[in-house]
Image (tube, rainbow, N blue to C red; front, side, top):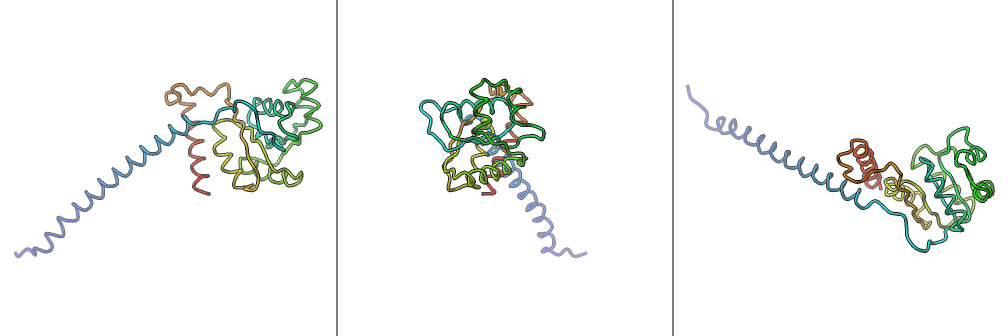
Amino acid sequence: MTVNPSNTSSDTSTPLRMSRLARYGAVYLLVTIASLAAGLQHFVLTLPKTPDGQLQFTDGIVVMTGGQQRLDDGLVLLTGGHAGKMLISGVGEGVNRAVLVQELMLNDQQANALFCCVELDFTARDTRGNAVAARQWADQHGIQSLRLVTANYHMPRALVVFARAMPDLDLYQWPVTPADLQLERWWNNPAMLRLLTREYAKYLAETLRV
């Protein structure tokens, strides 16, 4: 029986090519995982902090719902004279100003500000919805500058989304650090790891979408 030399060479080279491709794929996967892990670490370490010193006055404030602390900070900014109007975006059905006064235990100054200078948005269900509602509100009132109030881990994504929706407006940030956000050894805390990984993934998705 005669063996064709060309067929033997072909048979031996195919497993070699497959092995080489597998090694390349494994290296690429490891590099990708390492890059994502490094990016997540950088994302956490560079979460925005509450500004110090004199604040820039803005025409409006947009508070994205998701915690009482955000609403408290927004009202402090408003009553402190740092903006003329405020929008609370993403309010749940059945909530009104009277309910907020009771739930937030507002003082007279804050309650008066809530009734005179705050509007409620019931349409937004996510960050993009917040940006759409804020864009409409800004156009309605001739607003040229906004300060965004939301959680510090949400702020990077919010800035990307809002900048896309309103590139002609000046945007400022007021990041709120939730009381239950424990960043010390966050990688050993399953709840913190899930929260920050999920938010980082959403931030990357919005960045790539741009």
